[in-house]
Image (tube, rainbow, N blue to C red; front, top):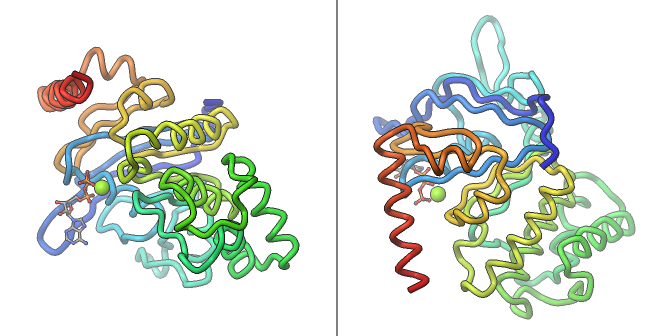
Length: 265
Ligand SMILES: Nc1ncnc2c1ncn2[C@@H]1O[C@H](COP(=O)(O)OP(=O)(O)OP(=O)(O)O)[C@@H](O)[C@H]1O
Ligand SMILES: [Mg+2]
């Protein structure tokens, strides 16, 4: 949490439609370099869609996304905004590392090979350079002793940590997490959150969609609540949690508060 005032990412009135269904309505979001932004909200509110527009997995239908002040995923040609060329798109996508709920590791590759793959094939690192980078990042997520294990020889928490190491090994500028602990058994959630906490402490810029409210409260510089494709609450977590500005926000926090009480009782 070494947030500076320098903006690394800026979403301006971003709109997204799937056919006639509008998933995002004029979303404005500014992300400071080194900051942690946690996004929460009910199912279907557009959280994943928002992350996917940031890293270019979904095109947008209005507004703009700026990375370090430059239009991202699109460019202006002949007065019109068009998708960037394939080469430029590949370059821009490398600014973002993404971690999903499902770890998506290659089952036939070891932890080390999973992490080495993209640095070798996409970044063009040599075998030994890629190995070095992969080892460093696996050590960083606490898996320095599991290099030779295949995914089925790792727990869910360990697999997710390999997935985090794999994203980090590409040296992205921003890490995007989409419910990274939702598929994990409760006792494995902690180890993944701890890795994310240490990344935050090291100044990694992170945008995290999560249901872990305690974690979000502790770690986030900015807490964002989405509902029906809009940002309805935004600010310092304690502020947002103690004083939601909208009825919808209050209802959401009340509902997850009740769920939490049921789980612990
Ligand atoms: N490819 C798609 N085609 C059509 N509709 C889509 C598509 N992707 C998402 N949607 C719709 O957009 C809305 C937002 O979906 P999104 O996955 O972003 O929600 P979410 O907030 O991530 O929900 P959850 O908490 O369940 O993951 C939903 O109503 C969803 O059905
Ligand atoms: Mg989602």
